Amino acid sequence: MELDPKSLEIVCFPDPILRKVAKPIEQITDHVHAVAMRMLELMHEAPGVGLAAPQVGLPWRLFVANPTREEGQDSVFINPVLINPSSKMAEVEEGCLSLPQVTANIRRPVAISIETLNLKGQTVQHHSEELAARVWQHENDHLDGVLILDRMSPIDKLANRSIIRELKRIATNRSGSSLRSRIPR
Ligand code: NI
Image (cartoon, rainbow, N blue to C red; front, top):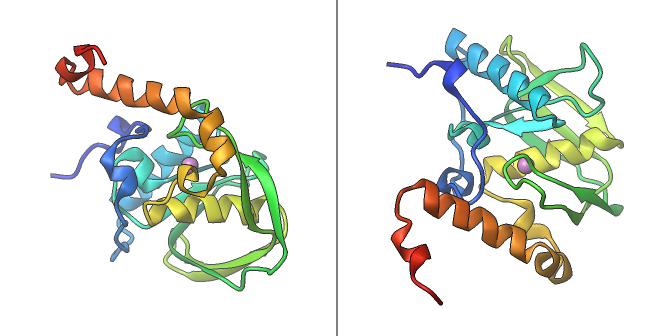
């Protein structure tokens, strides 16, 4: 039985699903449609500008985005492929809904194109030199199990060290295996 899309919630680091390489979606069913709508809802609630399927516990190559946060600008990307990244790079501060309170300056190509299926199953291509270019790259990273933790500088890693430790501690307690965290170190 398929899970109820309404039950989907954003999962946080260090949930192992965030480290899996997601699989292409073979058929854009009503269920895929409903999941995408729920993801847009979660993204707006958060609030955020993008959300990838692994972030709601699904190993699918799908993400939703709305970089401008304007009404009518929601988009769904299915089995996306990034193409023609610019050689010009820029460092911009990023956060991630699966890494609450973690921020870091991430270096990425300034401009990029993306080829993707939309919800109607049509192949479409977009190009961006603006925030969308960065959002696509961040969300596409999620489909490959890559997090901003992997792309941040050693200085940012150090700056975020206690938050990351806290996220791990919360997860350990939640999973019930809290015994280990009780052992004094
Ligand atoms: Ni993220």
